[in-house]
Image (cartoon, rainbow, N blue to C red; front, side, top):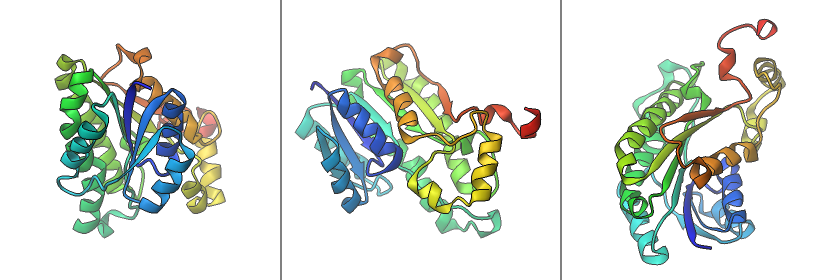
Amino acid sequence: MDKVVLITGAARGIGLATSHIFADANYQVLMLDRDQVELEKATVEVSNSTALDFDISVSGSGDEVANLICSQFGGLDALVNNAGVAQFGPIERCNSQTWREVMDTNLDGMFYLSQSLTPLLRKSQGSVVNIASISGLRASTLRIAYGTSKAAVMQLSKQQAVELGEYGIRVNCVAPGPVRTKLAMAVHTQEIIDAYHDAIPLNRYGRENEIAEVIFFLASEKASYVTGQVIAVDGGFDATGVGLPALR
């Protein structure tokens, strides 16, 4: 066990699935989340894991995390920026508080954490995988702040890749499509589920571990010449554009 990975938003969903895959590959897995109760439950089920109770949207948390990792683990080989929040609603109801809440975590927090950890990643010539969303590639209703934040994450990833490449740091971005999470299944009506199935060429939602496998690949040495890329893991959803499902 000679490699260390930090995964944010690790208490559930894609973050938790990704933690399992890194643990199975003998990484020391640092699982960061602001939901302390769920995080403690998650670290129990993930071997070789350590819980980091932080909220990346809080100013200064990036430096705190970097100092902790440096002092307790000596270095960092991979960073998976998965933490994110979603606020859905029409444009006219997106007030400054809602906009700020989404941006503080999805964009600002991701940037400042990555910036704080860059010296450690530079030493290891490590890798970064930022998690965006298909909503950053394909606009839809009720996602003005969320979709905009995720589009910004994609551009942030390219900027990081271009600037940090000289240090040997690779940066890539994964844009998940509809994923069968507990939350999605709780809020998606049967009508929404059927509509997604019709619009996705593979005719189904993705699974959390399917997203996690791509994240792990991009963070690993198997992707040693891949950087600055946005990979949609979406069953072909983005490829269909706005065409009618029956005519795709």
